[in-house]
Image 1 (cartoon, rainbow, N blue to C red):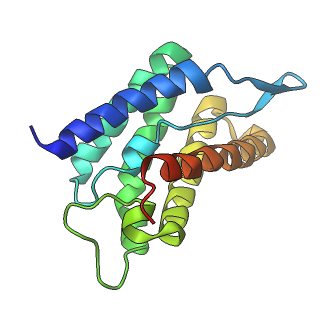
Image 2: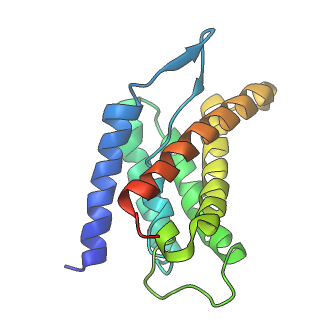
Length: 173
């Protein structure tokens, strides 16, 4: 079995467990509304090797999303956001592609491309993921302010954890 498959399988399991066992239990409730949600599971899609075919990325996005949906009791919300994020991943990578291009089997990590690249990539990916998540969860444009506020607060908190994740598990640099 390929080491990339083993590494990504372990990452899938670890991120699902972390999301369900740790981050699901963090409830930062303000006046009856939860404005802060921490999403760490999209890191699985974020760190797949760059040359992974988009169809496979979308299928894996659906798999991790539906896996998260089960314990969250949110039928299809995480899956929908993950599929959307997986689909736009290649567009984000194309926009941010370095002049020399990407290495063939590299993952888009800070150790491979630097913290500036990783932050731009992760920030754009996570912003769209969280925006779609809350849009699907609330599912009406009437609550645009709430969608925007929840997106911004959850984005900031999630990005902090993703940057810490990168420094803990990809410390080269």
